[in-house]
Length: 184
Image 1 (cartoon, rainbow, N blue to C red):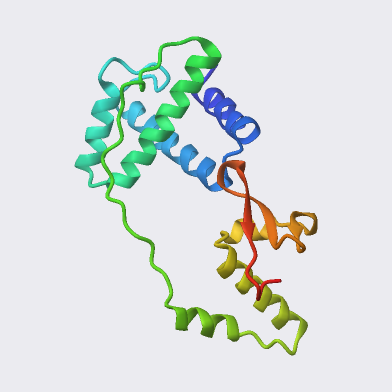
Image 2: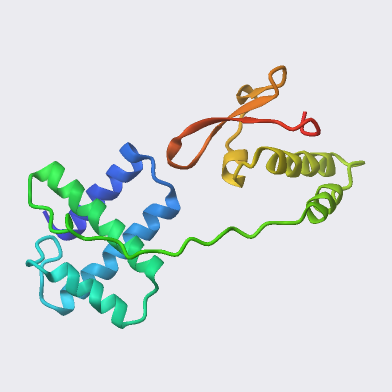
């Protein structure tokens, strides 16, 4: 089985069994391709790196000025790939001892109450499209849903009498959100 065959099997697993988003899958594919290119330069089989090689790769990333978040995601991709290889094919997991760098948590940027009110009032509710847009904005504001969660919402997910909706979040996790009065 070639390296690319192993990567393709892993990507299929992420899509079919783990329910990862297309963005995560694309990022992992890119991360594994970058790792494989590094291995090629070092004349190392990416599927069978020698002991300590992965730490050398992480050192290379740090030397090249990659940010901590990028390095952390690349570690996550390698750990997930080698964990999958270990579980599926019974091979040793060389990424088992890799640890992500400490990341600073940053608070998300948010709008002021006045900015939110102006945004919600912006659509022309005299038109069908304006009514739709106002409803979308109100749902986003009152529920705290992500845009992708709102896009995936179906009519049967709404419970108007209870004032709530069932949404499918990141990682295919289901949760119930309350609808604000204006959203109802």
